[in-house]
Length: 222
Image 1 (cartoon, rainbow, N blue to C red):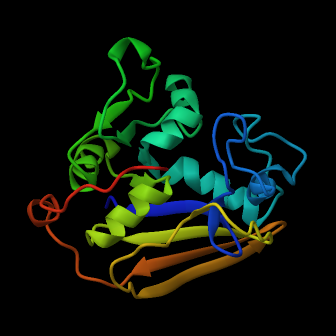
Image 2: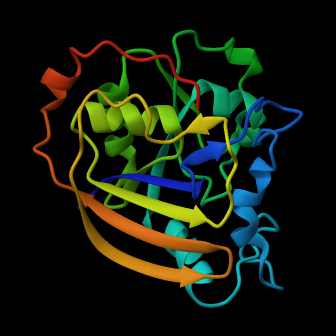
């Protein structure tokens, strides 16, 4: 059964990127790139040079990404910083849905297996569209803004955080600006070099798409 999962790496103090994130510093300043050190603590590439996790918990998590991910949802800022992944998201070239208020011109969108789709009518619509192409795999929320919008709308099933032993001290937070508290139930925890991987179930009744669609879409930063 398809689940909607926040799957993000963050620092111990809750940041997914440091200050001044952009094309020059994709993960911001303050050493924001160190939150992804766990990807590169091994000696052998896994599928792509982007992933070189150490054997054990880190490698297991990267393998799970390839097994679980059927579609991704990101914010416009992440799309811009990555140049749209060149049209091919590194995990399976999975379909990608981008939350935005203003889609880029069609001729500027990179072509590739991810079939980038721009969604202007909110997180509920993005999830509904992603569900249609994810098959029996999960919808991964790969940005702070989509994750927070899904939590606020009651549309998130699980939260998977890869917590890095690094204090960024500022930048883009993963869980700020929530309108209400969200109760979580821990499902699993595993520890690898440079990251602790914790998976939670969201303990909250979900709204239907019709009700959630009435929520005003929030600006998508990441």
